[in-house]
Image 1 (cartoon, protein in one colour):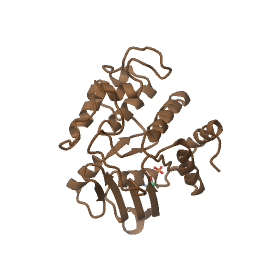
Image 2: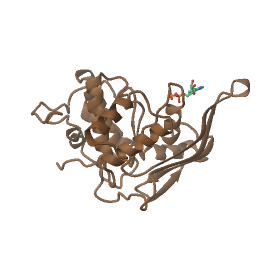
Image 3: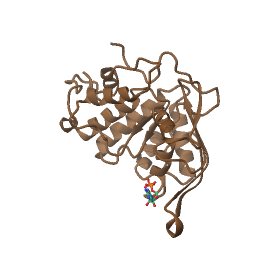
Length: 265
Ligand code: ADP
């Protein structure tokens, strides 16, 4: 079995140079109707380039989950434009006025990592990942091996510290630590090699150490992408901060990255 890379060998086109994998323009969103109608998103604009890690933040209730579910096609877009790069077709898919059946195709372009891992308790790590593989439409890519992805996320024969360990391939969620479960969830999000991974507070349910391990993995993931480098990653996090959208849990992370690698300015 070959080792896993988040990049597919073939049929895996990136957007044209300088073009984003995700483009959001003028997105507004409302909940309720009549007197109880409330606007929760106000003219949201964002572009995410290949290899970029963008941190969206703000107080609880500020609309982070709402925008993620809109991007992911889990909720119908009301106003504005969202375009997601479709690597198989070599073009953008727009989420505007898209009927529900077509939204399913949009969901397949994206890897999701949720706050709670949402793994199936009765299935092993490998089986959980294979479930996600089977949901993918007629694959132009035969797909990665679940074991390779788990190895990539250090749940194979080597642990985070590089020491030999018993692989966790056949463990069920209840037999794994919180951090390991979340890494299985990340492996599941990566199995179809999406160009866009959405993570909704992936470390919220973890203790500080497991949280840091998961964050490090997410960083490395972004870095493994073409055109990505750590400085760019730091910059994008700082830009998110300037827009007043840096979440509490990312602040220590950002400080850590800046402290280890120096500031970009
Ligand atoms: P965050 O993820 O930043 O904590 P959310 O996107 O979950 O924020 O929520 C944004 C706002 O929208 C909140 O005020 C929340 O109460 C409201 N909201 C979220 N989902 C619904 C819904 N299904 N119906 C009505 N209001 C909702």
